[in-house]
Length: 281
Image (cartoon, rainbow, N blue to C red):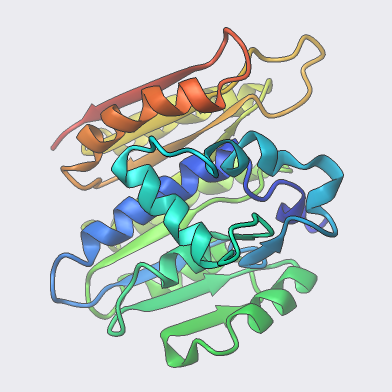
């Protein structure tokens, strides 16, 4: 787990889906005056250079945010997401890509709070540096986010979003995700929980959505974007998904509008498709 660096994958198609959904979730919470917390269990470095270092090795952003960067026909929620990335790149050249903590912070309000966990020591130091001017709004812990959730739930304002997005580099992460929800939902049943997962040719990845459905039972939304046919050698990420517990009532209709567009723009072959399903309260 500690060898994983998200910088290799920053801005790829999976980030597009994850961060698009994250922005919608935070915006919805901000519609009410009462403050809320956002808790990110695997925050990464929070900000990534695309023109130097790790991101240039695979250039995965070219299959994600790069495909949307110059578009003039973006649906409104996608346009808002891209606009946030543009704020980091005011000269119009795509050089920096924000991580989940940056998107959360820049869609929250002054009264809201961001709590970040990152176990990787190098990324933890970068996270501290990248958010050094955020003041009391942001608290960062270089520790295991799965373990840290218990001390934070329920958050003091009794409103919040928990983003759970481990690397899944080790198979135990799939089990940890299920255990985290099973243990923490009773502590904060009204909270919104967003689980990101990769589409990989391994049994744990394929089974996770159904296991989450059985665990939660009702009041969930599942969206997934497949960008290509799985490779014959069983290597590589061919898509990703988000499973949201207690989703905003507006999210399904928003994604109905956006997902066909993402398939068209980010799809790499005839295997490109999306899943959008929901079980309401």
